[in-house]
Length: 622
Image (cartoon, rainbow, N blue to C red; front, side):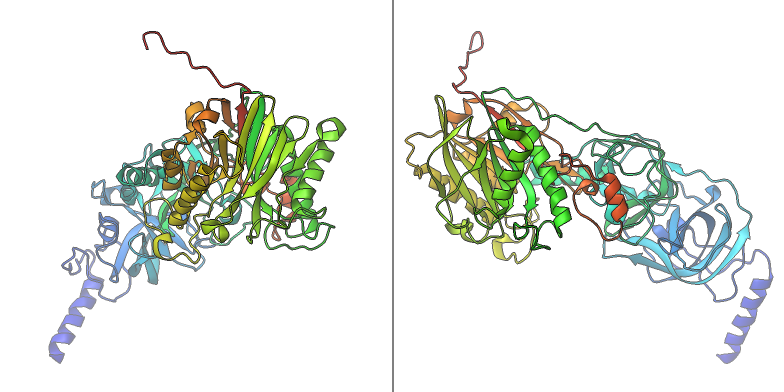
């Protein structure tokens, strides 16, 4: 046995010394690595075989030798390089990739296009099955040829299934575009943007009821999207090197901007397909900012606006940082200026507010502060807002609350306001606030709402994510909708009529169970009834949809003359908010404007109500 081993070893050494000696081929079709020194030109493992044509490599854990050209170097950022097979080594299978990432942290002076040979272990990086095929634990890396010019693979369209991006995993690709920018929430933190080949993508349960159609749209969204990344792992990069222009109010990288000239390596990292850019994006045609609210037909303007944690400390300039919202007095001043600018431009006669600090109604309260600042900005003639004050020190026990403000010259509250603080509103959803308003012949009840969010903290039982697109706490939101409808059916304000308008942040998209329950109880989705363009008030992870709704009883729906959404927030980068990040105060100072853009993360909703109901004229022959 010992003699046979010596013979085998001698044969192996002679094989290394003989040019073109073929190594043993294993059962998986990959040459067996014999442990000797690397030798350029020997039969190597084809990258497409290492990658395979499925989600994960068929040879995970095996040591292989690959000979290919350097297509990108990410040593300082991602800790590795990317390799691409020579054209004569491709297998012509469109389902398999010819590129691969190599984890390698040593300095590497060889230019792009250099032919190299590497011995390393095949691995899948990240939680299965959404992993990145890579070579790790590099044993040896040598140069095997001079650099040659390289062209990235042109990608002109997305596939019909997310798995189809696997065909390009590890390859350097070029997207001429234009493609649509659909998400920018991680631009400052991770240096990333989300683009889609299909234009603006919508939340699946905004377009479809939970079920197969919604799941199909979720898959289509995932298939159409790519994340453009800055090829770095650190958070809050000081320089967004990959943008063709800095993030400024003039170059705002809003959703719906058109992106052209993308060059980078496609990989699957953190469960998502990303293009790690090797060059700055060539061009961005920035979407226009809407500096005026939408025109709505009607005699009375009613708005709904989530003001994103409006907390004013102790109300006397101190008390910061607060539990939510601004972290210091200067940040609060910036936040207040933006919220006031938005409310001033809305010029609504009544505004339902969400996410106001729940600290009562005294002179130092957040609500009192907001109304005071708004009136000051509008001046003596126009600054006539008051707030509705229920008979309670505060509204429920949540940190945030809903509120109603109104112009006393335009509308009059009648009777005492009412709160619903029972059932799901005692702990989970914020207590709704209902008030009767009268102006001329129009007499109606307005209810401000803010249902439980989709976040999963402490969710259990039916409140856990059911993987149907509705997120966590859907059961609580459905219960909130049921209890709310039951309560209003009893005429709690004793108005003697059924003209009711529900507005606010329901934390449910347009076809989710809570909204559909209210519609089943007779309420009319007046946004869908009046808006011809696809509606949205919120953008999350590249998907747009309505979390903010206006639902009217049929008798009041006849008074609705028009509805509009003012897209000043959802499409905007968080980089225009009031926050003062510790990592870059000067950048904030250059971006910040005391205007309405990114005053919140929700877009305000605006309705026009006619004093007289609309008379419907039957169509001829109808």
